Image 1 (cartoon, rainbow, N blue to C red):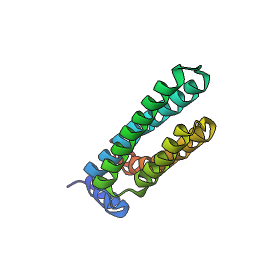
Image 2 (tube, one colour):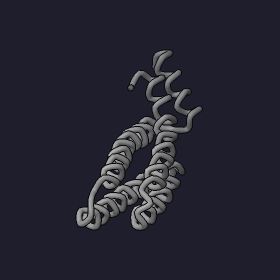
Image 3 (tube, rainbow, N blue to C red):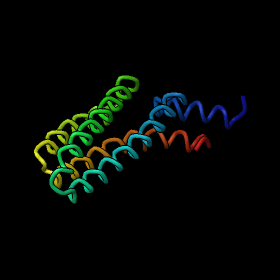
Image 4 (tube, one colour):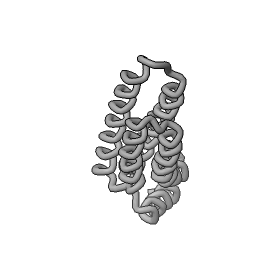
Length: 134
């Protein structure tokens, strides 16, 4: 094994992540951030809907939020990264806020969920980047 390979192994051991786990965390966190950003955009769009458009759009938005919650819980069960679990809890709150048509607070709560998902992404990115894999 060359010196670079040995230093990569030592580096990963220090960060307590293997390459596969780091990729799983990074890839899913980035995908979930995109989904959360889209959810925020849809919440802002719902603010401008009129009359009879709102009930159906609200239901669809809550279903979308439920799907993201399932994704977050699945990734948490695979990785034990607490940011995914905290984000799923925040999205439960988002669903309540959407149901009550408190769309401004719902959007702010989504922003907090994005921050929670960003933390494990950053933690996984660092060792992958140091190894030249990203």
